[in-house]
Length: 401
Image 1: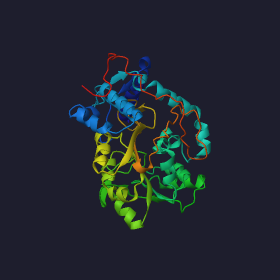
Image 2: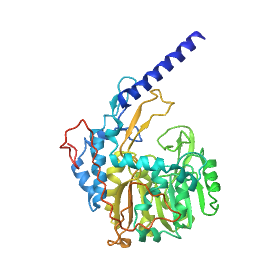
Image 3: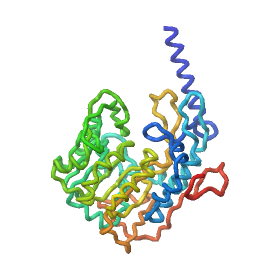
């Protein structure tokens, strides 16, 4: 009993010491920038031919997309190295160093209007986030013509979680939404979300399967969290489906595909190529979970000569995320400057060069009951200007050294 009490006190002291370190001088203790598969962004980015990779990534993109990419590359460069041994070494940083002024304002506006989002989109748990409820997983950045084009067609929602994305997608008048998730731990919350918002059962279907390049069965550890991943090895059997095989099986006509599946996006992309070529859906693909997705998904899709218009947008403010309480180094943080960065694409034949989308990034306007009209405004292009304060002023704009 005495030994057990001593161990508990030691654990408590460790937690209190970490919390003190977190609060010290307005700084946070961080363990660096890691990807969803446990790797280090910097190791990939600065040990490869990044000059060529950046050229391929930026090719044929709009100025706003290039600004977003430049910001992400700067943050990858200046973020602390990922520290695997959390108990021996941490880095103290000022959080605002890694969160641009624009992102600080977005976060403040969203929090100020949080009750309005909660009222309009009731959820069984507090899970309202800007990427879903403000930017609709990127659809608000897509011009009006592609937005209208997807109405009446089937939607693929890769990464269902509790049905938050599917809820927003119903505003675009799909024929039916098929929401995929490898975890059944949130299925009751998913159905409760639909019930709270009076979404008919024939409009949204939860498919308990992951998305990948081919159909197969794998084993995972189901955490029932928003970041459940095929890379969490365990003993639970889950079905993996390719979008192509599922669409053929169900005889669907796909108008929109969203993929945000915690680091296995590139596999799902390779499993949807026939659907993209045949149905030409609007695409929304998370590319922030690991550096290979960030730099390689867009060039890969372009290599298929599918004639799409592409954009890169960050849909949530950069942030510094707390490591959950069940980790041994409670109180430490991961830096997430690429948070919710998406690749958006739509068929080039739907492009309307005279109607430039200039969605207001301040988030001060609460979303309306209808999808946004995206009329041009006089808003200036928001460039990331707030760079780390302890770095020289002549920082690179788009290439790492």
